[in-house]
Length: 34
Image (cartoon, rainbow, N blue to C red; front, side):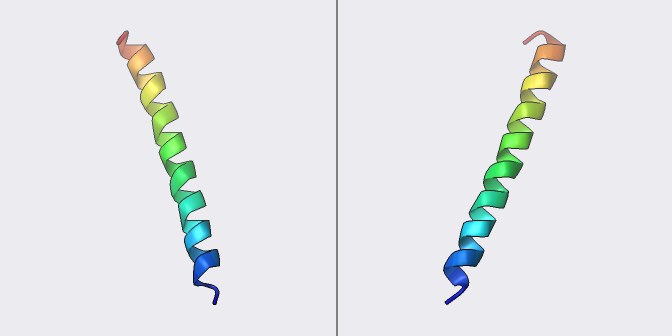
């Protein structure tokens, strides 16, 4: 009990982190002209 909520929160946080990193990568790639 409560573990499913925690894992769901962790998955959400991880997804957001990956999303941010992906955005930063896109900006960097655009800056490099890739």
